[in-house]
Length: 172
Length: 94
Image 1 (tube, rainbow over the protein chains, first blue to last red):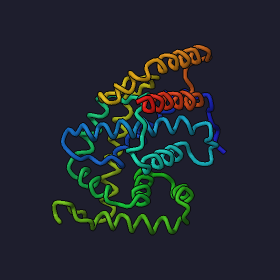
Image 2 (cartoon, chains in turn cyan, purple):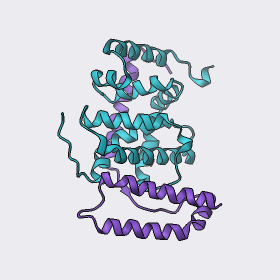
Image 3 (cartoon, rainbow over the protein chains, first blue to last red):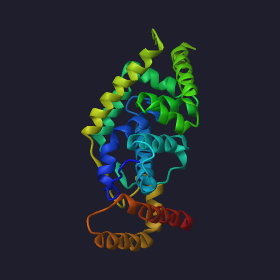
Image 4 (cartoon, each protein chain N blue to C red):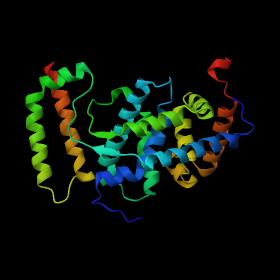
């Protein structure tokens, strides 16, 4: 059981895991159009929803896995749920320059192509790829997804193969 | 787009995520209690609920003042629920 610092401020919890939140946002809100306000709005909404869920779930975290794995798990669960149902509240704000840089980074050539392909994966495949790229330990991925480690390895290979062989929209 | 092998895909995304980590290190995330919605429709809703909102924000501020050292994660739940409730009240008013 890991030591858990209960009286942790929201700011420190979010600051430490902003990277994971941004990555999940990039993974689940694929880049669409140059300077797309719609994309930015979806990222803002998803970022906030993940942040709120992390803060609300924090008291229940018992240290069964590493904190970063727990953050990935909460974040992907939020992202899988329907973006459109997110509330209109806006109490967690990420600065615009971060969105600028994330947008620029996510729309960069090959990365954008990959995100466009990832968008077409099934929910569980996209979730799996998020954990793999995030270097979540295989054992913990297996626990989260309710699979054996061998089954996870097999699915990782299959999903990578699927991504590689996928045709891009403009090729079809 | 062509990839020579499966690991190329992971490599590209892992490098990309390393850059996202660098972005995150320089990012600023603010937690605020209340912010006027941006769209006119939402704004109209917030006006309809303004009386309720003022009372709720005052309550939140008093709660904040009674805490020893700022806003803690374990205390956010009821705050966000309160704000959601305000939104729901405003929607029901309209």
